[in-house]
Length: 396
Ligand code: AMP
Image (cartoon, rainbow, N blue to C red; front, side, top):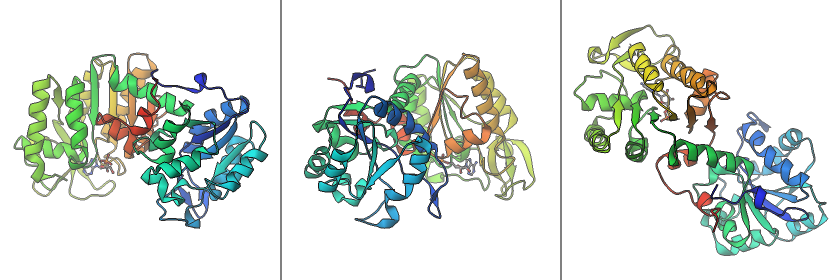
């Protein structure tokens, strides 16, 4: 690892500011999914056991100034419950109240400070705000990969003014991502699906330079099919991006990257669950039909190709997986990938937005090498961009 981790940190008796992701989904004041809490527990427990005063910093929502609707106070019960230890909440993230609470805390105790975004200085990475945050810490640990694509005071600024380390979740994420694209076992396949090409242009541009096989699925495949002159009927298709799709195909050819597009599809006349569908080759889509999933031949081709692949990076479903039976291609390929991971034949890293729910839906989230819950940060990493919060943790 080129990053300082908790192994490099002297924690006993230290005031440790720990940036975590507590931007939890809530309904009626209750946390509805504790995945993000579960992910930060190892870091908190290890630091606490090593005698640090663990001072958690996080944002919640997109408040403009102080707004109790976005107070982190509401996540304290769920956090304390998961941790199995009390969590002291402080109603600000800078200033005297924080200093007093930290001074009163015993080594090993856990504090949660109020939403960093209640201060405009966080998102502005304002040096004065960084200084105010740093005043209450001896060191900084970043365990929020999902916020690492933002150069904010609590994700990036602090790493420049305090000794800075990657937390265990950040470390696991960096190790998995590095095995996925930076230093992968070859051949490498990327699967990129999802709704639209327009949101994934940078990602495709980067991947064609880095991977050996690029599988394009989902609604975005329709734009590539249209670029080949295929009539896609009423399918989701960005006709204005047909020339861009052609350019991506040319770039891939020049880089020696094989592009795989669907050869058949599940089509229907209505966008709903079980609408009645047919399986057609892609050149047989009627004018009033929509492609809503890749067909069995396309799936078989991808699965067969997977046998030649050592590393898989995956973002975006093959079809409208929320509506059965258009989850079939995504589920079948996900299970095939999971089996190869379990057999020790494949490293498979998946992530970004809907991909996590797609992998959960396929029941393989625990069987892939790594599933990243980071949305924007995972996509920017796939785009080949440097993530400021990660760069700030590099050694030397
Ligand atoms: P993204 O957030 O870009 O990964 O897109 C995910 C969304 O793409 C999911 O909600 C899918 O339902 C949708 N999707 C995938 N394939 C298709 C398709 N062929 N037609 C319409 N929507 C699709």
